[in-house]
Length: 146
Ligand SMILES: [Zn+2]
Ligand SMILES: [Zn+2]
Image (cartoon, rainbow, N blue to C red; front, side, top):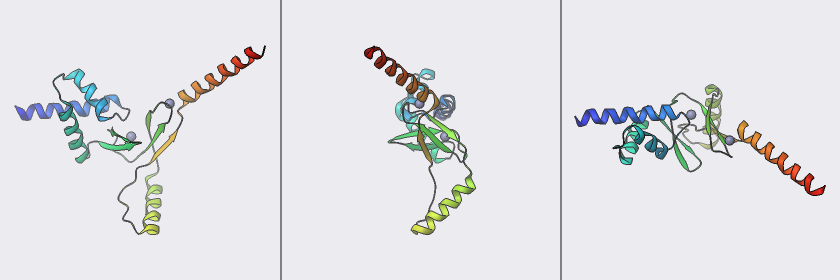
C-alpha cells in the first residue's frame, strides 16, 4: 500500500514537471503537485525530485542561484531571459560542444565530466515591452517640452 502511494507520488511529480514545461523550481513543483494531491508534503516532492534526477528521468539544472528541473533529458542548452526569468531549451550541436570540452580538458589537465550551457538575454516579449516603455517615456518628454 505504501509502495503504491510512493509510485503515485513519483508519477505525480514527473507529470507536474512535464506539465509546467518551463524548468520549474522544486517549490513551483510542490505548489502545483498540491493542487492534485493536497496531502503531498514538501519533503516527498523534494525526495522524488532527487530520486528522479539520480535515475536520469529528470535533469537538475542550476540557473543563477536556483535549481530547476527539466524533463528534456537530451543534450541541449538553456536560454534565460534576464528580465522575466523565463527559461527555454535551445538545441546545440553536441559534437561541437564535445570538441570544446576536449580543448578545455587539454588546456587545463582537468577531466571534463559534463557541460551546462546557459545563454542569457532578453526574450522577444520583454524586448517589445522595453521598446513600448521607451516610446512612452519619449512621448512624455515631448509633452513636457511642448
Ligand atoms: Zn522575458
Ligand atoms: Zn531544458
